[in-house]
Each structure stands twice: as C-alpha cells, then as structure tokens.
Image 1 (cartoon, rainbow, N blue to C red):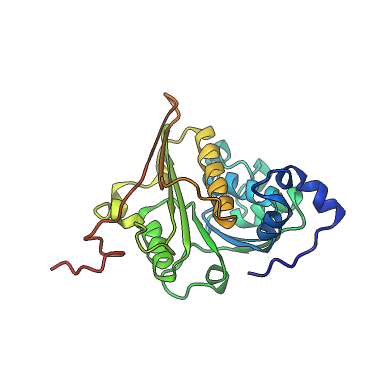
Image 2: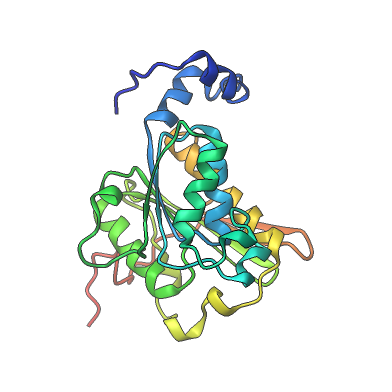
Length: 256
C-alpha cells in the first residue's frame, strides 16, 4: 500500500505521542492513515475498539451493525447516550466518533455480516475486527477471512471473563476460530442476553484496537494468538493456539 500521504500541522500535533514511539514514527502513522479497518458489531467491544482506532488516526473505518440503541446497552456501550435510544447504533456511533476525530473517513452499514454478497467495504479492508455477539456470525466471519486471507481479530466477553483471538490468515500455519469452537452452535451461548461486567467490555475492546494497530504496523512480536482475561481475579492467560488438523474450515483433510 502506498505510504505517500502528507500530514497537516494539526495532525502532526494530534498524533505526536504516537509518532514519538520509535516503533511508529511518521512512517508508521502514515500506514495508519492509509489503512482500512472493518468492525462488525458496535456493542460494548465495538464501541471501545472504534474509539481508540479513530483517536489513533486510522484513516478509513467501516462499521456494521443492524441493531438500535437499547437502554440496557448504556451500561457498557460508551459511544451512546440516553438521547440515542432507539437510534441505529451505527448512526449514533459515527456521530460520536467524528466528534473525536473529524479527519477519519467512516462508513456505516445498518446490517450484520452477510454470508452472501459481502460488501466491497469489507473486501477492501486489511483487517476485520469481530465484535459480534453470536457464534453464527463469528463463524461466518472466520470462514470469509480465512478464504480471503484477511487478518481477523476477534473478541468476546461474558460475565467477568474476556477473550481475544489474533488470527493472521496470511500465514499458512494459522489456526482459525473454528479450530476451537467447531462444536458450539448458536443456542449454546450468545452474549446478547448474557451478564457482562461493563469495564471488561472496554478492556477487551481496547485490546482489539491494540492488536489491529500492531497488525497494520507489522509489530507482531508475540507468538501468542489467544489471550484470556479474568477481571475478577486479575488473571491473564496467553497461549499459542495451533491449527486443528481436522478443522472443517482451515484443514486440507477431508472428514468422512
């Protein structure tokens, strides 16, 4: 991707604390401005993640969510206010995010991820961030990203516990989401109706933004691709998930 972008004096000041980091600098900040990221789901995770991506200078952001703001959302979905009740989440989110950074190009879609007829905005993205709230959607996103070799960063949180998956499908040996959750169906678990500790949604969403930015800047130092956080006892577990040789998505083996 071309890195030939210019920064105004205002932008240089706005992103100065990023630019001061030797791993980012001006060239890294240009990469962020040139990048396109898609977030699927503007709930607790998507709200926190999108805020930090926009504040960090991501150039192009696509937001997908079919839902409207509900009173119970306000406990953790920090882009929204009571005056946003019944508004489409993507509409209210874009308004809030552009207040934070009017220089970012944001496109909104009042729809979830579709298995058929994937919008061009997703096709043009370097990274897809899965902030959806059900396994059916997560599995569909995983399959699409695997087939198109797009990096997928996925997060989830229920109760006091959260998870982050970093899946780089450009790497031949990368596992996929299905490697771990092949037997879990929609009725087994959905965070749409589950208890969630509100600050945890912000923590996991922020982790998703961190991993997306590192991916764009190719600062992926850790081999760990799974992080699990228990916010009740402050326990953090990191490990490397390996490919399931019988996975129906990413394995070449046929299961009879």
